[in-house]
Length: 316
Ligand SMILES: Cc1cc2nc3c(=O)[nH]c(=O)nc-3n(C[C@H](O)[C@H](O)[C@H](O)COP(=O)(O)O)c2cc1C
Ligand code: SF4
Ligand code: SF4
Image (cartoon, rainbow, N blue to C red; front, side):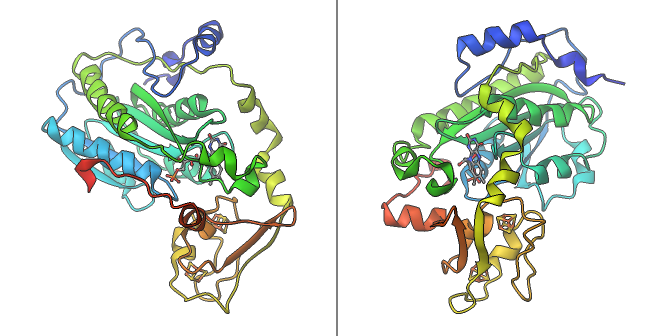
């Protein structure tokens, strides 16, 4: 049986990594080899959670890149996939946005339901709002959820893009968000393709990646439960039934089932303040305030600022 701690490098190494400023792609050093289940991968499973398309887009691009190397690839949202089938793949890669400086609780919950991965190579990617809060450690936390199931790490990458956290919630306003409206760009997509190739190279060489947390002050703030405090400052979180077109998107995208699909009432205790409902409502019918200011959803923000994400050619 694998001990997942065996992939983790020491705290000293983590501080060196922080000093080196591990930026967007972080394929850390190799460590003593553990024999992976197969070094001749024929199939890959790419699963993601996400609310506004950034993580999904990169997951699909990873899938397309694996296909160019001849792998049978399955790509799917994490919540839709029958996890019992995960153990049969030669490579398992999971993606998530950074939420409140860590892996979102619904992703943690879902990944604990994975079956034993029996020394399958595993990897993760995260997307985050540039400049991010704790993306590298979040990525490694995600990898650790897979090594806890017996996976052997072969990589982690963090990709920055325009923040989908409503500007009013960041406290820093739209200006900061707009500075990164050009991301993701062609360079992001090229890094994503390279990440896919690097993972395969590592699997074929049985090269295990060391889990390499870095010092990030913002990561310490998770101890103070930022989501919980943000929720305390949220008001008026409800569906405006006069505007709602009853499409069901909010209830369908809520990752914790906090929206009753019939009555469209929001259970605020259960809500994890992911902004999925407000970021996916086509009718701008989800109401929310933060310290008295109106929260504007991602599509509305993009529309008002004439922002359109450019897709990688493989996906368009
Ligand atoms: C509720 C919420 C919390 C977020 N928290 C963070 C954070 O702590 N650090 C960070 O770098 N980005 C944060 N972001 C930004 C997202 O991680 C980023 O925009 C991501 O690419 C969204 O991915 P998606 O489009 O797949 O949902 C947050 C976004 C939301 C909506
Ligand atoms: S109610 Fe909205 S903000 Fe809360 S968890 Fe569900 S989708 Fe996310
Ligand atoms: S997503 Fe918007 S329009 Fe659709 S059911 Fe929910 S509140 Fe109504």
